[in-house]
Every structure is written in C-alpha cells, then in structure tokens.
View 1: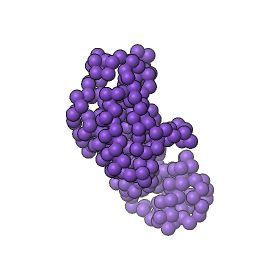
View 2: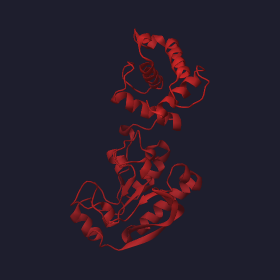
View 3: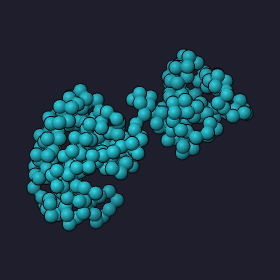
Length: 273
C-alpha cells in the first residue's frame, strides 16, 4: 500500500482513539494492531472469517469500512483492492482534505448562454469568427491578480494572451472573479495557477486537428490539479466553492469542458459545442 493510504488509515484510527503513534505511513506492528482492534470494534460490519485475513487485507478492509461510514460506496467489505475501492478511497482523500465530498457530475447544471455570439467549435466556424489558426490578432489582457505558471511557480505573469475579439469579455470575467473571491480566495483555490492561453498547436493526440488554443480562444487553469482525464471527483476546480467561478465564465458565453463533459476541468473556451 502507498504511504499516503497508510497515513490515511492511521489518521482515521487516531480519530477512533485506537492509534497514538507517529503518522509515518508505515504499516508496522502498532498500526496493524490498531487496525485489528478497529475491526473487532466494528465486527458486525465485517464478513465471517475476517480474523484470518492477513494484516494488509485487514487494513484494506478498514479503509473500505471508513468509506462506507462516510457514505462513499466502496462496494463490499472484502479486504481486496479493486477499481471500486480505488475510486472510493480517492474520494475519501478529497473528503479528508476539503471536509466535503465533491458534487456528483449529474448534479452540475452549466449555464447555457451566448451573449457574445461565440462560434461553434468547428474549424470553418472558428475561421469565420477568429481567422485561421495562429493568424488572428492576439492581444494581452491584464489580470487583476498575479499569475504563477503552474509548471514553474517561481515565474509570474500579469497578462493573458487571447484573441482581440475576446479582450473585453475576458477583462469582465477577470474583474468579476477578483470581486467574488478576492486575493485570498484566488490563492486558496489555485486560480492564480496559470496553464496557458494562446498556443499554436494541434489537439493532444492529433496531428491534424487544431486546438482551440491556436485561435486564441481558450485558457487553461491549474492543470496540475485538473488533468485532462480527471473527473469531478478528482479535479480541484470542480469544488462546490468554485461554482461561482464557472458561472461568471458561462454567463459571458464561455464553455467549461469540465462542467459540460466531466473532463479537462482546466479548460475554458469561447467556442460552443
């Protein structure tokens, strides 16, 4: 088991007053004995024969029990680490860090608006609106807060490169975000972790299809914690506290791939689907 998962076990054992040793992420005799005591304490929830399980299986069984206790579906308590347990423990980590579970994707209802008449994400439509990829006029829009490059936090910038047709819309979004969250909230939620604006490149995994970044109509935010394939139960920008962040973008007509497709939560674009 990973050190982080053993630390999680130790933390919940400590909350039950069954473990008072170091949170060192090592499954030593003290941790194993505390897990055994926890299973005895909650034995009614465990299948017959659990006392014969090896110590590692008992530890996994305890994590499954904690998930169930927190209303996270880990499947049956069997002490085996499968895909459902893996997903449930990831949600338990989020609960432990944030004090709340992320919203289910089915409960997310994006605002459907297009006051700026942004184009559909089709090459012909994008060309008509923005010009051909890498050929449109790109401008720099000042950001009310300092942006840190997510891949190099020692480097900061003050502007975002975007197509000139989006400069006013982006400026309005940024001002509203700053008014809503303030400097402290922006730092807290990683809204200062910049992933890039205009970038003349093809879509990931494609040699022929241009990325919307190539028209200067897309921006990435906090990519290290909102990876391409992460769902709402993993992405930091899917937190309930950031609903206002997305609604500010959506009211201007921008599209969140996270809120519409439950993937690529870093990405927002001025192109509809």
